[in-house]
Image (tube, rainbow, N blue to C red; front, side):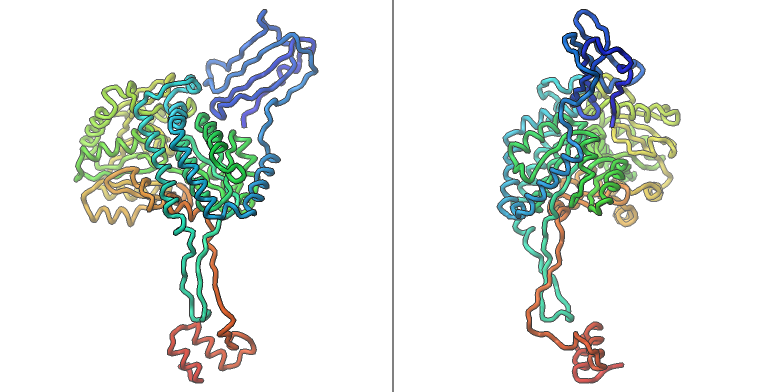
Length: 577
């Protein structure tokens, strides 16, 4: 949590003007916190002063001090706006648990009503959703909160696609909900004869969904759909780095959904910390592995189960027998078209052979030009970097002394507009930061090997990725890749599209996450599978109860070993022993 230091003001006398300190943290919240404090600061005749951070530091915060000579108050500092703290969070969880215990969220009718409300919300407020996504993802920070018409083609296309995914999730859940809720029949054993059994999917209770900024609408609403479909009371904590979408989600959920069981809490680190201090029945988090450790540590305190949708370095292995034009276009789509690389499943690096690399680079250069023009920096079809912090991080990756001279395509950047062109590197060192951390941006290293099968060892030397991609016409290589590479998901001869198939689970493995969702898997992620055995009062055998005579022991052994013939022998007093 960032804090504001007021000590410099405390050494002045108290007879001078009253000061109101406004601290605006764009990166963390996009919200304005107001603090009041009496200070002897002398200003101009307008009684106003504005302080900015030193020019050498990125302008992530602005500190404005407005003075009024009419105020004469003792030295003090107070937050005017009530904050959401641990006490508020505890009260919220208590209210949700009380609502859950009434049983209304468990009913089929309630679940359907909420799903229909989400569907209605998406249809009726599509324009508002698109505008919020555009503000968060397609404009630099200094334009973020202005009213801007949607003119960026890629932003519109991406927004419509993500909204369509949410609609599709609602439609599938509404269609399949009765089937998903129906208990699954299970086989019973000879030990319980006569009996029947079933697996009952029951809601967990009060669950917390913490979403991320790169797809702030879809990655917020889709897990909530799963939680509601399973019958849970739900709290959504949207990402503060996408403030327009976060604010809109708060308003829309309040307007369309049942507030007694579905809530949105906005904020940054303090609010998230307050929520994590509470006991939840499940926590669903989408974001970075670093924060994933924090989430899991907080959950462990209460033995709360978690779903962690994280990330990692997603490789794409490219054989030399491919259709080069199609391969290049699909790599472009899976890297720069996917939010300019700001996606957890985007291609992080490529592995190919030394001989094939020059042809691949030429094809990728042409693919980039076809999609984004000769000057990608002027293209309306490519997203900007989400924040100045992320821009600086990517810039440092590009400027590392080990890699700055390895750029073979692109490299242009504009810090004012937060734009970086699609950039390709060739054979960067394995110990460079570019190959050590998830890039999450428009930078794409190409690593060369002597034989394409050598790529498997390189991939397996790193933490397990969220996705892995292979381009080849060789069936043996396909099978070898699928069997040898462990990843959350995989696509052969394409990128990212596997996440659009609702019958496939989407989730990570190892450091790329745990648990999965999408379609029925979302319902299962927020459900407990309760085992139920049914028996009548008939068929109560004395063999089960002491004293255990030699005859009973033989029969028990025959039953546990299985086989009707052994049981018949035991009942007749015979045994193979």
